[in-house]
Picture (tube, each protein chain N blue to C red):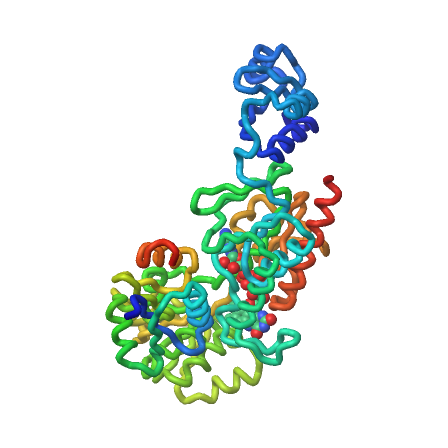
Length: 84
Length: 382
Ligand SMILES: Cc1cc2nc3c(=O)[nH]c(=O)nc-3n(C[C@H](O)[C@H](O)[C@H](O)COP(=O)(O)OP(=O)(O)OC[C@H]3O[C@@H](n4cnc5c(N)ncnc54)[C@H](O)[C@@H]3O)c2cc1C
């Protein structure tokens, strides 16, 4: 199962850039559209302690808000090991 | 010593060869001047020492290097770039492309790729694309730059610059320092914060700056939009599709495109407060309300909202150079028509500058211009 979940909205450029970044890195992920999937929206707000902004990334028990390539790269390495 | 051309030459030479050195500044009569005389027997700077051993002046340094006599080995300091570009928005990416095509040794440092334009979903005014998603346009820009193999440091924030010498020094938040013969500043703009209590603490938790991204997350909610210009009006329209009630709070009367303004005024969901200041955002773990104050009566009231969208304009990212370069009253870097800033070898382009009309195509055009100007500058230095 994919270790990474991302919560997104359809008209969010950062969400699209995040998806492209993960695909380029050949990292598996599950994406939820929180504008149509109310359960996912609830879950996102729950795990992030109240965040209402996309994208939210859940990886290896860590929650990251927003797409920041530099810090995400570091977290990916921590979560999946080097080469990720 | 100040005003000493051979001191500058010696430093550039060492820098160019990647030889680590430290500089001791002297002035006639100073303690350091006496030390220089004592250690080298000479009274004319520059004097170069290898450890404790005096090498001599600039031409002695060049000779010692050619004869392989220096104990400090070349290549100890990191690479010397022809040009470092700060910023990965349209201006910086275009500058990178043009620099790479001139075969300049180029480094692009940026917090992100794309910049401000990633706060809007699509564009319909970039030549060649009647409509394109910004994420796709930025991906195309990046791909084009990547084709030339430009070295990039993404996710790094530049925290300080040293522009005093001929070699410019750029330090990033991971503590690394990069050296370059020229510099292009393309740091763009960022959303202007309200600077009221509660704002910072609740960013992402109801406080939002990107309505295209986050508006759909406020379905059925009551929300406030702060601001009275075009971007605030657009945010209201984004929210109008999903939210229950929208309060629009502006210090001034509304201004913007008539069509957008009419649409906003027609919506039954929208209540407009003009001549109102926003004084506080309320909430412990997420936004619960916003406090506004009438400029007229000074009456303070609380609006119960779950979201506050802040759309009060943009600020230039010129903090790094605000006390080094000339800026205008908005903090934008002043440039001439060659993107020159007033310090030789330092160029600026895009939204961080005083160039009129902030648009992607204009920023990209200016980025190209900055690189070509940097290229001309470098040629003249040879
Ligand atoms: C909501 C919105 C909608 C818009 N719509 C349009 C439109 O429809 N059409 C159009 O043509 N234009 C539009 N614009 C304007 C357009 O986005 C800008 O003109 C353009 O992005 C400017 O490009 P730039 O490269 O100068 O700056 P920016 O895009 O702001 O890029 C600056 C870059 O510098 C980086 N940076 C800043 N400081 C540092 C630092 N200290 N260290 C490292 N990196 C740093 C940033 O991370 C960023 O990558 C819009 C802007 C916004 C905000």
